[in-house]
Image (cartoon, rainbow, N blue to C red):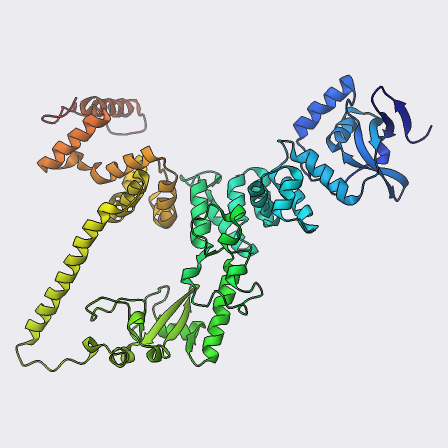
Length: 545
């Protein structure tokens, strides 16, 4: 009997090919097969056979002639599980490009194709010179869908494993894949995943931060607005990628991938941005400027360990000049010639513009600012009057700014949710000492030490994960939640009003808790002391029922 026998059906001609003569295609986009679904398909094949023939093409292997499976890898695997010796197949003559397109078209229509498999398939087409638009047109997809899924193929190994296992959601993976540098991807992955076992007992429970938090992490920590660039964005010689306006990593140049980034002049490649900064600083040093980059050099400007605070030797040119009646920053006040004496310091990835403190007054005078001139010595007794006058003038300026803010705030356009977010940021700072206790009332179960160590992450992440109703409740709780003990009459009356609005029966809730505590104390057999009798709580005067 030949290796492949022909069978004539009413609709087509196919052959029965021994399984040993078949091999899976290396370009098949499907790399992951669900074991349960394969078992289910194998049982069906045992009962009714392979209803749809495989599509194969002839190939040569070490054992002689054979066939490469173009379409039907699942049926092939399930047939092996079912114990079949041969399967029906149609033999076609396809080129490599045709095989890849057919496989993509077939698998792309399936809902169970994993995001990684889909991305790898798109990457194979991209390697042949097709861009996201061409791939989408070929496969009948939306360009934006292809553009966002394609970068998953370049995720670091840890991220791919987390995505395949389900630890990392697809949306998080797509945001992570926007970061082109491997080390930075790993750093961002560490920010996306955290131990949700806040009790600290037992095994870690790995969870992902909310999608909104993941988006904020990428945009705020791994993207940079060109407005913050110290270099000329149009300088084509600062990096191999050339001018920023023509760079594929500029958000505005790739709307299919970065359409959700509000600003368009944003660099999404932090490694290239830093390279341009470093090359620009090199140019500045070669032009005669003082540039502080090494640890020893930076100690001159930042002598305090672990702090970005300047020492006394330099002045930060971005700071406001308090002697200036218009309160302008120093950099704006300096003339072109005086700016040649600026000092540039690369501190924690950010370029700081500095000026020698001993020279700043002379530089302001040379730039034509009379307010910087040395004041004439005051007669004895006039020093305090001058100080009071200066303080008074500063109060007048500050009051004017506050009045202007009060007026302008009325025209600020924010959604109700935007106002809540702004108020939360303010109240969290104002009520800083109460934040931990309020978070515990809203679900945080970690230890005091865990909150202390992870506060910078826990506070913004938990707030970002809240829906609007939860944010409103948290805000009000943070403001008045502890007024239950207040002796201030207006505060007490407002607290009772909020209880009524929320439908909280003070007496009923308090007495239920007291009775539960009494019962627990009575049932406890470990204590050596008798249970403490608790008094029934009576309603505060005029309390709402």
